[in-house]
Length: 162
Image (cartoon, rainbow, N blue to C red; front, side, top):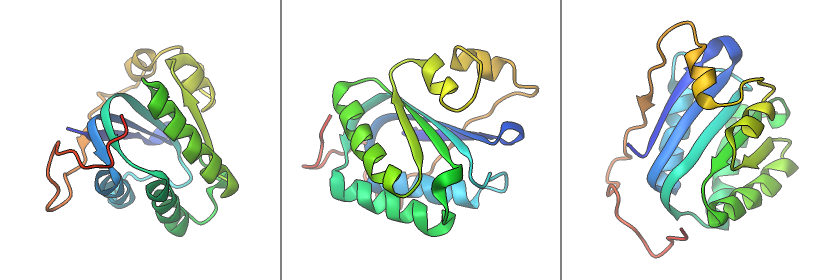
């Protein structure tokens, strides 16, 4: 599955894993899925592990659309903090572009290559994701984000950047 997530409500954290090909329709589907989840956490902490992303079909105009979609329902983004774990220089650069755009809206986003600093940026003391998830009092189940209708799974377009 390209995006899967879990909500650790007791600590107000949405944790998602991204893999394979990621594009705007899939990110928008993930945002809608999070918003409709009964365990949704307002003004949440968000940790995205995108180290297994093989292809990004996203450009700067898509980043603006994502930010607009997040800003509209959330309103004040100043209470939200996000850490994104990346595995490539290109993904890091795209993440930093989004970081700059989102920062203007009050969203606090940090980009990392290591788990410990990504967790620390969210106020967590664990050194690894495994440590965070192992300490959880009940089994953590990841929920897959459904592919958007008419979305060709894994098909690349001319926008592929990584």
